[in-house]
Image (tube, rainbow, N blue to C red; front, side, top):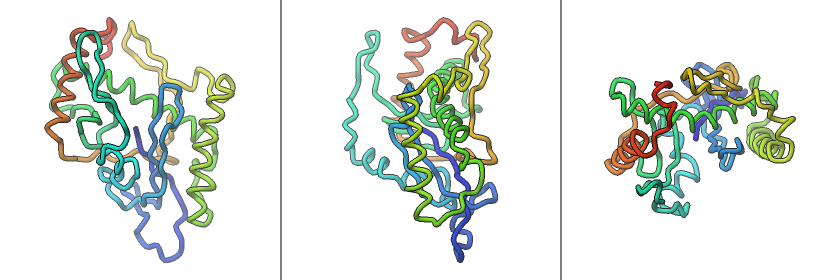
Length: 239
């Protein structure tokens, strides 16, 4: 999961309602991507004045997550260890038993650094997906200047749906291999694929959200797994 600020031209009289910390008017696009770079969930419309750490709470996804209506399985056996099903997000989002975020740099041990690396590999999927969206749909490269009600349904949501269609039906032409991150596992380096440029889609600002104890426990389980039975041979080269 990730979120991006999409620049808009606000309606007359809006004042600072859509004004964000980057210094321009916007609304926020929240997306969840799968391993095929398709957006399995997307939500648009929260105004940019809302703090980034709280933007998720304005979505129907968050309501269903809170009310346990997403039918997330409890856990699965992975190499003899029970691990929970989780969503993966970056620093602005809250740590929960069903939503993992990385450790802050100042709290890193080598084991936690490994966890952050493994989490970032998954997080790069949504970063690439947003980068493709901006590259293929030029409207995201400028301030969207149409009637506010039509920005969501006619521009942003339609673009997300078309992105999924094109990625599913014409992947070789819509998203050639150079669009994606390429990781040199031997040298521990990454050649970044497409990213949404800050001038067109600003990333969410890091927040200081409250941690839930159960979220810490689940994260610790993944730390232990990634450093033992779930270890991959190249991870030590990448931290």
